[in-house]
Length: 178
Image 1 (tube, rainbow, N blue to C red):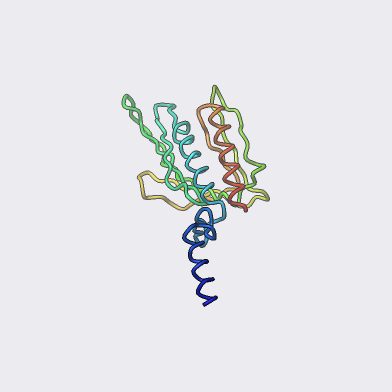
Image 2: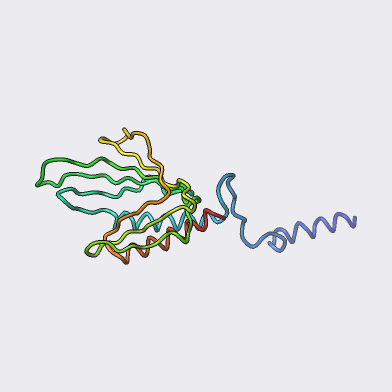
């Protein structure tokens, strides 16, 4: 009888939410780093900045910054060139860049001023470890062998955008290195 009262009281408390956690605990996927929701948000913000300010025009060629995969600690984007409507001639190759954020050193993510109003976000891995893979193609989906580098620069149209991208990249690197 005493056991039944104890069980009934426990069930009543559970129904009232007294013993239940205040908020459900987030499910943790195997292989995904802790704080991943924060990482997804940072990468979404980074993708918006780079898409908006990473496209550029010069020499009769319009180069579009295209986010391909900004989820997890390895991000991939493409720089796709097109000849402007009033031009003909050589079109540079499409460039695919994949960056292993967990291999980068957050202290080596910096803004470097460029010509006119442009600026770059310079990123590097400590100790010369390859963190960036670059491959090129004349046509989409026909990429050749990748080159591996320990540093890379992302050119943006202005210094404010480069600083915003630097902050997001630094935060993403910190989250991936945990």
